[in-house]
Figure 1: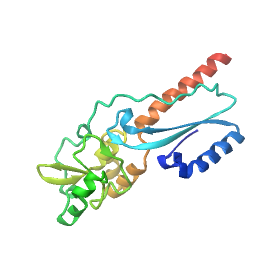
Figure 2: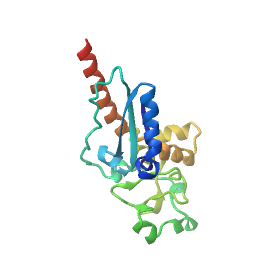
Figure 3: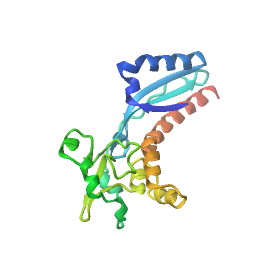
Length: 204
């Protein structure tokens, strides 16, 4: 089993909750491993710290599971931006620009044309307070559904696919902000499969 949550679960405030979860899993037959991983360490230019919890049945666990090592980040956020002209609906109106301020940028509540964007939230699809902004020749804008999902590791056209199926940009932004970064999961899966295959080979 694999679970993901905000990194606060691993802090002193919530450590008892985490320990109780692990104890419960132990009682029902699982060894549990956990670690806080950042999406930017696995190929995606988004600073997104999350706790990942991997639980393996004791009868197939050899105690050799290890979380993946960081991978050098070679991409910048702009590599994931739309290549075509972006619709005006993604550009800030005058009333929206109050969310873009020196204070917010200095405190890292927002990012503007950042090489590594700050963590996506459920507000990413809104013009008001979406955290990550892009400035280009037309002005200031928020990210499109394609860009948001690409920066979570999904295929670049998934945003358009969802739009074509009736989802709004706000709904897609919320889903993206709530999602788990695909690249991180892929690396965990590789380690998990390696661990299980080692068990199979030893018992064959």
